[in-house]
Structures are given as structure tokens and as C-alpha cells.
Image 1 (cartoon, rainbow over the protein chains, first blue to last red):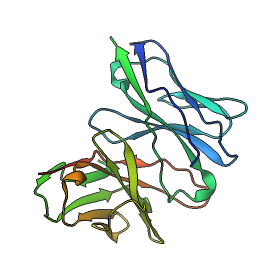
Image 2: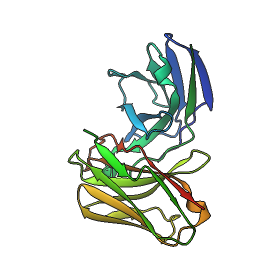
Image 3: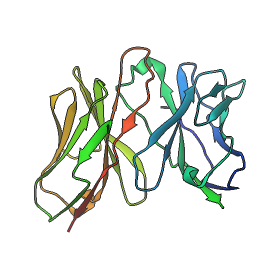
Length: 113
Length: 115
């Protein structure tokens, strides 16, 4: 899987929007951009994924740059429960999915009350 | 209902023992995985398995072996446990197939402590 680069940590205030950046300059045309998060003492949890167009779901929005070399996960109104490590992962669509996900270090998001 | 469940949640054992961790998923997925998260919080895939193939991370010692009695279960057997095996082990499942990009669903982990 192609490599992604994320800040080690970010801090935000409760009830404010959070923009989590991810760089993936070596992304290939068949790589989907996935975001997962891991809350304390829990397993990773799927957040969102996309290929080229921006995506929205109940948890977050994913903004993908036009050249696909970067993306941003947007939490529209952070709560204390959003404090977690957020992972940006590239996954090759042609692989069939049986090879799983390759996790990097992720971004540790701290939410201040 | 819990989608991916692991047992036990905590496992404390001595060096040299053999132990198993069980994993069950009720999502109807055809692929299951084992991940290891060490003390530095790095998540590394150990195995992925479906009814067609077993993919093994080449860095995993052969003391670790996955066993799947059916599509809903993938158990992890560990022989001759070592101190370095202490970690949190996560089971996951997904639906796979050409063109699929379905999310992985993870269990809440088994914390293994080897003394």
C-alpha cells in the first residue's frame, strides 16, 4: 500500500470543527482513501472512505484534493467522544480486499472541553 | 448484537505456555484478520484468511497459527509464548472480492500479558 503522512497529534476545542490532514503523494489511480479511528481501549472503527469525490456520512466528511495527493477528514462539531487516534490509509481496489489494511502512526486528536 | 467478538478480553499467562484466542463474527463476512498492537500502539496485520487463501505476514513467527473451523470464526493459537508476545490482539472481518472496498469491522481486542 502507498504511504500516507499525518501529523502526530492535533488539538481542538469541543463543539468546533476539526480538519485532520493526510498527505499521500504516491497514491495510485486504484487506491481508495480510507479513514479509521481508534478510541481508547477499543478496536479501530471505520469512519469514511472515498476515491475522487468528496464524501459525507453521519460521522464525518472527506475532502479529497483534485490531484488526490492529499485529503482532509472533517469532523463538523467535535465532542469529547471524538478524542481518538485517526488513521488515514490507502487501499488498492484491485486487491480484492483480502490483504486487509496497513496502519501508520495516525494522528492523536485531543479535544479540550 | 456484537458484530465481531473476541474472547477472552484479558489473558495472563507464563512463558512457554500455549494459548488460544477466539474470534467470531456475525456479519456474514468471508474474510477475517488478526492484528497485533504492541506497547508503542503500532497496529500490524498478522494474518488475513478467507475460504480461498491464507495470507501470512512474513514477520509473524510460526508459533502463531490461525485456525478457522468455519467462515464465522478465526481463532489464533500461540505456542511457546514469549515475553515479546505481550500485546493487544485484534480480530477483524470484512467482505472481500474483486472491486469490493468494504470496511473492516474490528473486535475490542484481547490483552495478552506474558510473565
